[in-house]
Length: 353
Ligand SMILES: NC(=O)c1ccc[n+]([C@@H]2O[C@H](COP(=O)([O-])OP(=O)(O)OC[C@H]3O[C@@H](n4cnc5c(N)ncnc54)[C@H](O)[C@@H]3O)[C@@H](O)[C@H]2O)c1
Image 1 (tube, rainbow, N blue to C red):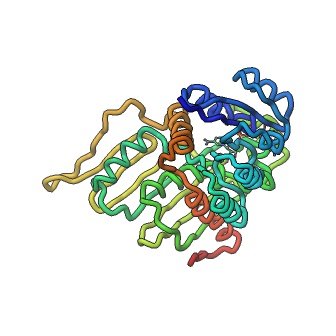
Image 2: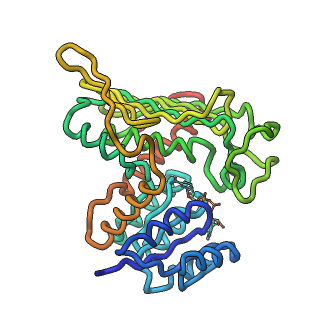
Image 3: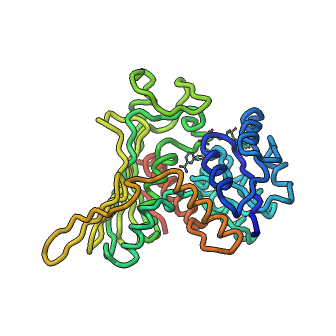
């Protein structure tokens, strides 16, 4: 069986999800790994039994044996590494967000077109089991025309600090880190209409709440409570060319009773919730029906979601299978993410042609 020889660039927290998924695939071979942190990359190479170890991504890309790479580095390096990888003849799975700016997004798109190599953006929620189930209902017309979606990813105490809280390396706070997941999930299920306008607000009111010591939360390796320049909360209304709209809010910190993850879609024939658990609403014989799909997982399963994403990338590379998260979607998503920040900065709605 043909195996895809893979290199993973970035050996931090999320790399385990990529490494484990490649390791579990019979169609992939973990050939190389890179991180500028030597101790971290050596530990990961040992853990996953990876023969070639690098502290420079340029050196990894010069390895002719490698056919494809996963990019799991900070957001500010995604575009640079993706373009270099494509130019070195590698196919690319790049973690979300595609990059930090529109300029970078177009440069990556140009590199994909120029090199003819493949690039998949890490919109992992598209690969959730319940996403696939709901999509089959949507494709069959059960929701009709989806004209409104609403998504929240609200943490009351969850600014991870480190590079996540450094806008130079991250590009922003909850919008670009967690908002991207729920915006993309809605947009994908809405049929990916083109965005026409955005009205957004960002707030820096609570900071990272270092005064709260009674609750634990995930912290980046280089967490330092004194360093944080990203927004702590944002909301936005996004309009699309088909008249549909999407309302979203997300936070790292907020005075809220509990954290919330919710994703809801409304069509002219039915509605649905994907998070916090799959639910479908319909109407039959003049009666409203709340339908409770009997499924294995109520919410997104990280492990199977990542496996499905990586399996899909491998099939795309080896067999020219469908690319479920092409670069064009990464570019349109960057329009939405940077559009929220731009609208908030200008304090007015911004429009796209
Ligand atoms: N899909 C998801 O659910 C999900 C979840 C978490 C993070 N992510 C994304 O994954 C990426 C990494 O996040 P993380 O949580 O693993 O961060 P992390 O800080 O734990 O790991 C990032 C690693 O990249 C390395 N690195 C940075 N720049 C580099 C460069 N130029 N060359 C080599 N190594 C470099 C760092 O040394 C670090 O070890 C981010 O883009 C983030 O948005 C996605």
